[in-house]
Image (cartoon, rainbow, N blue to C red; front, side):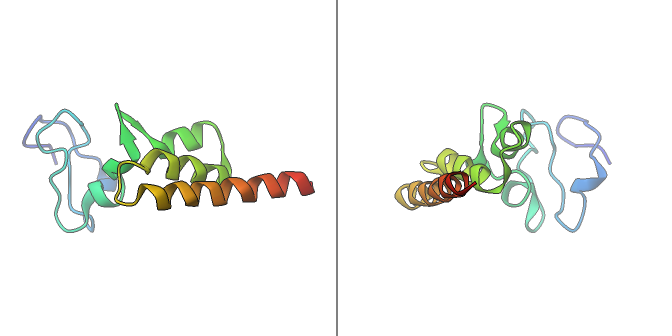
Length: 104
């Protein structure tokens, strides 16, 4: 299937059950979804900025679970509803990482 907005070929992994959305961020159909879709499951906007997604940075630096969550909560703190709560979550994961390293 091709995108009706830009003509890009749609990968199979974004087909049902999540519906479809163009993977080209510059396309008008980028956020168009059926049901849950990419914007809330695979590419939430509160984890992206300037074409960079939090998960890509976490994986590129091989941060693991705790440090990955620190980064995730820091990056989304001012972008998703409860900034203070997200900062506290980041601190909780960071403190846990420090404890683990001190015990090693």
